[in-house]
Length: 264
Image 1 (tube, rainbow, N blue to C red):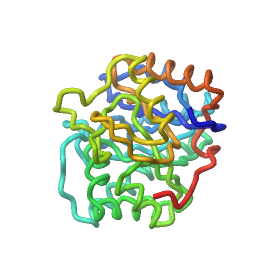
Image 2: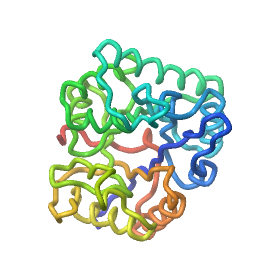
Image 3: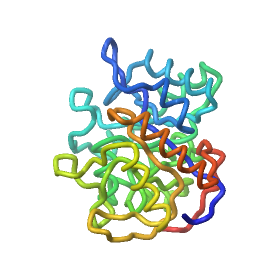
Image 4: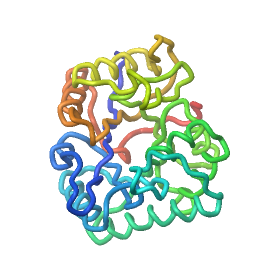
C-alpha cells in the first residue's frame, strides 16, 4: 500500500424517515469521520436530520449535505430531468436546510455529496455536473465537493473552483470506464466486510480504481465511502478502519484532509 498519512472514511447517514428506520447510524458514527446527511428529498426529515447532526458533532464527525432529486418514494434512485434552474434551487434548498440545523447545534456543514441517481447522472453528464457544482458554489464556495474519482462531477468541481475530495466506494463494483456497475446487474454490490476491505486495499495499493475486469484507472484517493444502509455496513466500516490503522493510515474528517489539486 502506498505510504500516506491520512484518509477520510465517510458514510451516507440520516436516512430514516418518521417511524421508518434505516441503518445503525449510532454505530456508524463511532467509526467514520464524515457523515453525508440526507436532506429530506430522498430520505430523512427535520427531526432525523437534527438528531444526526447532534450525534455526529458529539463524536467529532464532520457534517456533509447529501442532497438528491425530489424522489422520496424512490429513495432518490430514479432518474429525473430537471431544468438547470430547478436543479440549482433543489440543491440550494437542501444544503441550506442542513446548514440551518447544523447552526442550531453549534456546528457547520463542510462538504456536499450528491445522492443516488443525481450523483450517477452527474458523474457521466458534464452539463449536469456543472449545474451541481455551480449550485454548491452558490451556497458557499468554501464547501468541499465529495465526488467519485474519474467522474465528470469531480472535474466540474475543479473547474468551478471548489475543493474536491475524490472518493472510492468500498461496497460497489466499477465498470472499465470508472462508472459504477448498475445496481440491477449481478456483482454490482460487494458483500461482506473482508471482501469490501480487500476491494479498498486493491485500490489504495494501485492508487487507482480497479474494475470488475481488472482494469486500473489511476487516481488520487481522498475518501472511502461505506453505504450506511447495507446489512454489513457497520462491520465493513470497522474492518476498513482497522485495516487502515494497521497500515499506519489515520482516518480524519474531510476538513482536516490535505486535498491535492489539479489531478483530474
